[in-house]
Length: 493
Image (cartoon, rainbow, N blue to C red; front, side, top):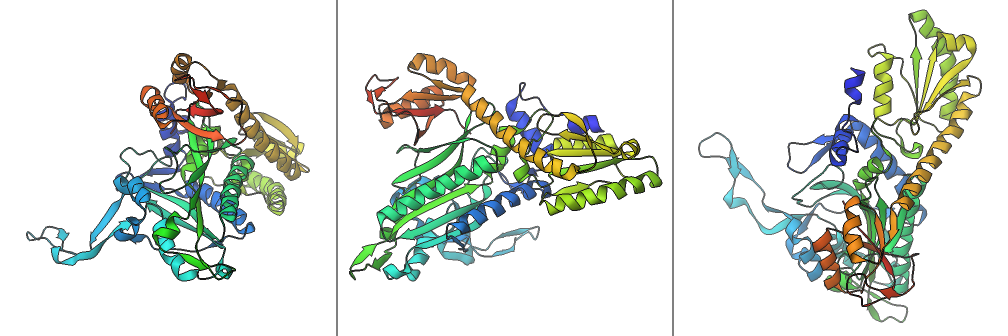
């Protein structure tokens, strides 16, 4: 049973299938009855909750407050900002009727043609329009600014090709929407939030990211500028893991959101929006996991430590439990989540395989002989290394070990990114080497035509213009025209 539980397609054989296997077998999610949507199972949702709680705390430390806005958006709202509607039109789900009735044959139900809505409603693909329609009622004077709101919600984008967590028709996310009195304040908030995302990715997900600016082709529909964090997955592909958009005054003008400035003169409000989604779950999986299953960074693991007793009878279990309970209590005092799995419905080998598959960072195993010897077996999930440690003071030792694991996962991911990042000046060389994945630092002439050519010929895109990248001028690897600086080009999810 344990062997069957652990079986996954190897990454080297089929990386895509390995990912799909792992999402299902680690009890993270499964396909739903609704096309393109998924059911997030309790263990997967527990990871998302830890992400959500951490980010929510970080947001609030910057002055952001949570709110909630309607799921349904009047179609006329979406049409007010031309670039915005063009960017999302092909992905919109539309509500046209509000009632069903029994079918004429009595075997089902049909849409009642007499219950057509006067105005069709869009299931939100994003909330800029409904929020700015609301902000018009909130903002009148410079004293009402800034407005710093975030909402945790679901959105619907009718994707044709879906993959659990990475791209689904419905997904969970947060979307921040801020209103400011000046362009400088709005830009500062836009940059502040992308740096917050980078801090979260690196400190909690143990995932190194590059902060950069999207090209005009890749920026958010209706934005003046889009900042992104780009992460490299183990196969060398990029994953856009969070974005922050400077919206300028576009939405304020579309919804006539003005305020009286300090001189009592009317001005349009300056806006930004920013968000991350359950795509971060996919990033977490593909950054750290291996052929044995999930590898979770301790800062986000729902269960950070599992303790498994090995016993032959109730008397031995009682003796082990007596030793374990003070450890459980001490771990709790240290803020470490621990599970003592003394259930007798599964063999120890099955438990070991299950917790390994689910990526629990540290496993403690304690048997009757260990009790006599005053020792415990410790296994760390990141390296699969086992060691025997003294039972006395083990909780504090585990706390130190968890931080070592967190750091090791980050260092390992950084090393892989460095190994798979290349400086490239030859387009022919690029076209050959991109087949093996990686981040390519290339010169680009800044034109959308060259950008589209690269995408058409190689399926790679300009992921971002790094904020802290090489700013040495050069020549475009494709056209030979002048280039201001290097950009990151990669294939992506």
